[in-house]
Length: 199
Image 1: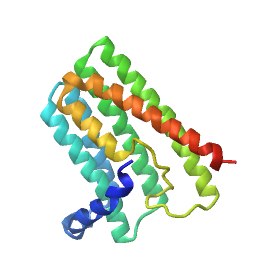
Image 2: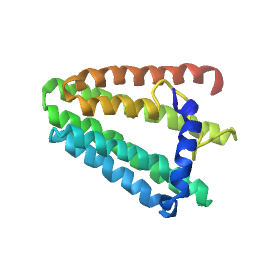
Image 3: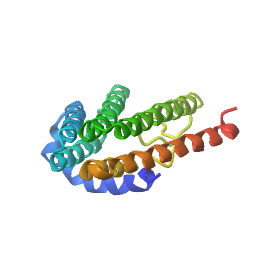
Image 4: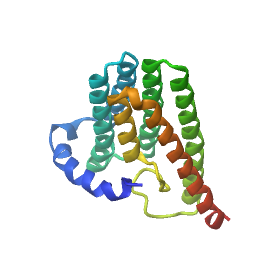
């Protein structure tokens, strides 16, 4: 929901970082850093190391914002890079709730986490199919490697939900429950939108 509005802000603040020594790093290296720190955050959460988990998660998101910015700045942006970025992000998006659930280790925690991951699964199908159709139709205006249909829960909202769950594991079940409901609404939004557009 907020990604489109915050993208210019993100690009403005990342500009000086990209212009510095970080800009000389290969974008794939930054993508790998994003993946490793996200998985590390999940592992830290499983051991109830909340501060470490939050720090690694935020570092992961910082690296994730940099890889594309560096690639565009160097003129090396590619479909392969975009694909790797999305796959690595998806692994991280699974590692965080699984790590939190392992740290809580309660029946309710595991059930809510399973529901959340199920909504992620359905959401991934909804947006990737729509993106593929829009690409086939030659839709313009993509600011990422593919046309991303908007929704209630996007990258920004995911960062907020996961940071809260990592920082305060005692309320993670409620955070994941609210997030699962919001992701379900996002899927519903896209289904409703598709009725009039995907004919």
